Structure formats: C-alpha cells, structure tokens
Image (cartoon, rainbow, N blue to C red; front, side, top):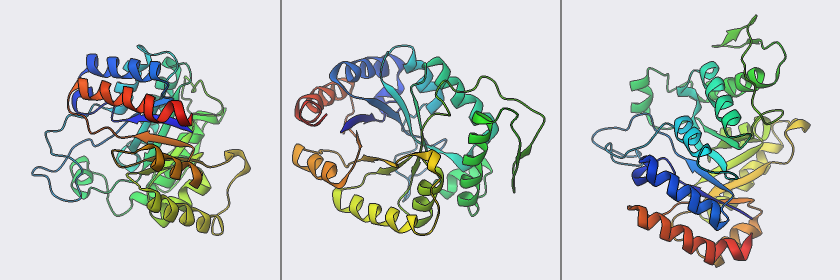
Length: 283
C-alpha cells in the first residue's frame, strides 16, 4: 500500500516554509505523495456542507505543488481535488502541464465536480450543469495533453487550429483520479479516470463505493488505455494499523492520510507517527 499526506496547502501548511519542511519530512519518512485540497472561496459565515471556516487558509493547488516540486525530489504531487467545472479547462491544462514539467513528471491530477453552490455562484459557474461539464472538461484536458494537433467540439468548449506547449512530462498524461461518492462519479471514474479518489470514507463507506464502481462497470465502457482503476482513499483522522489493514483488504491502493494538525510541530509529529505505525508495516 502507498501512503499520501493530505492538506499540504492548507492551514499551517499554507505558509511556504512550513509546507516545505513537512513535505521534506514526509519524503524522508517514506510517504509516496502529498496532496492539496481546493476551495477558491468558502461561504461566510460557514454553513453546511462547507468543510471549513471562511478564514481557513488554502493556497491554489498548482502554485503550491509547483513550489513543493522545487524542495522535494521523489514525492508524487497530487491534487485532492481540483473542482474541475469551476475552471477554464484550456487554462487549467496549461497550468497542470507546467506543474508536471517542473516536477519532472510527479503530478497526480485528482478532480471532482464540487458541491458548494455559493462557491459556484461567486465564480460565475453554473451549479446545475457541473456534472456534464466535468465530463467534458476531462475530455478537453486529455485532448490538449495528447493530440498532435489538438481540437475539440463540445457543448461548451470548442477549439481547433491551436497548440498547447509544453506537453506534460508523463506520457500519455498525468494520472487522472476522479473524486466523488455518487453514481455519476463512479461512472466518470470508470469511463474517464485512471483512478478513483474517496475522501473521508471509513472502510464501510469504501465498500459501498466499490460496489457502486462495480455497478458502474456494467453501465459504461472502460477504455483499455486507462489501465486498472487505482483506488485512493482519505480516511477519517486517527487511522490505526488495524483500520489500514481493512482498507488494504478491500483493495485500496493508496491511503492519503488526513492529520488533525494545527501547528507545524503537529504536522511533523503526525508524519513521524504514520511512518512508524503504518508506512513501515504496510508499504
């Protein structure tokens, strides 16, 4: 099993010097990857289902990962997740390709459809059509990253007679991991994703999601070029060894751990504990 560390762009790790030290410690401790979260804005005052208070610091994922690429050597750098329908996919393709280039091919692209309607309203992005646009935008990213002469004709995105350089270092492109716990997300992961990413799912929740993914396989075709569907999960905090083994038995390939950390010292302590209690026993 591989282990990731979630939240490298949030809270205390929104400070670059703290994020650098935590990422370097994670790399030395045997973590495979570090992961960013994303909300461009948060509702003020906080109301459900908003996950954090509006004053919670959160760096842009591409900026954070590009910075961390320069202070690490081996860590994979993941977005967990980017809210895809809030983005211009042509601009995002350039940003993410640039991160893959400066990191020498270490980017993992987690995406999701989003769920905070006030955030969509502030950005000027239609909330109701977010699922359809997520599917379309995934196809846009792949076209810009892989086609010799990129062109696209979709419901909301159209282009031809252009090029987008540089291409990502990874070929054919960085892995695309689809987040979400709904039937549309499962179908999206099967038909368009290299992996599926479940956030804050306990083992029982993961079992239900995996059953949903299996059901999706009977509804949509999986292109052979996508390979096996890699399963990544962020468990609730305080994931112990027995719980991690339950995830492993379910077929989870990567646990992206979520520390309940406020200070830099908390983060570093969590990294050390995870290395001793989980990584050295299950990797």
